[in-house]
Image (cartoon, rainbow over all chains, first blue to last red; front, side, top):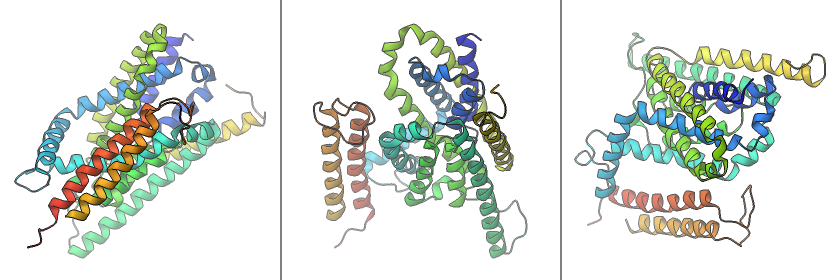
Length: 303
Length: 69
């Protein structure tokens, strides 16, 4: 199979799994392991590909949320100049939302910059990624269970039985400590197998956010992290000029896939839950774990 | 109000010092995965950003507290 085709397949996987709560890093470890594409991961050009995939995904998120980001940056500029979040300065709360995103980015940014390479070096083994993917599914199911109990308790407290009432609070109702806690959930996603979007969504739902608000906050939180991861590595592209076109093709494919994914997910979470993704993670992770275990012990040959 | 600026300022100075520590080559840089003796731009940007955020946070905290008459 040509290198371009393999890059496009990886880009499709990256673009979709970066935003679906099914662990992009886990799939980036498992899929090449399944398809025996370890030579791509071990090649020096893999760096250029990763940079382009990250940039493609970040561009997709910025494109989808461009109105939000313009409002956030305008609101942020107003509150920074005024030094406060009062309604006269920040009537719609965009400045405060930007501050929540900044606060949420700090924990994962700090841990990621310092420890990510150590974690990836230790955990980038397909069988381990499969095990953590199963755990990711369990976390998603637990998050849903917790959210349903919270809503049931809230509905009982208000004495209202209509399930459409009180679907959860909005992002503006979060405190800064809650934003930091939700952002800290991204740290778990450094381990291949755990999903950034899944963990942050569960974290958001645990603070009382609706599914839609959790998804939106998760994608807004992801943008600076993914963009930063891509931009920081851009100077390395100068060393891989011969592979730039192939990597750029991968970036475009990842970007288009990511855009379609976020568009689907924002619509999906208006009325739906995390359960299907949890079941996928548990089943796929279990099957993958069994496959790699059987291959490791030479019970079956590799694909 | 003054304590918010003091804490924020102190944090900013610490983060700035760490940022400078990571950008100057030749020193042994702890907690770096690659060559510990070269400049680490990522760490520099991270701690510079934290220094800026510390100052801004101090300003917001100070302005959110009622002034004492």
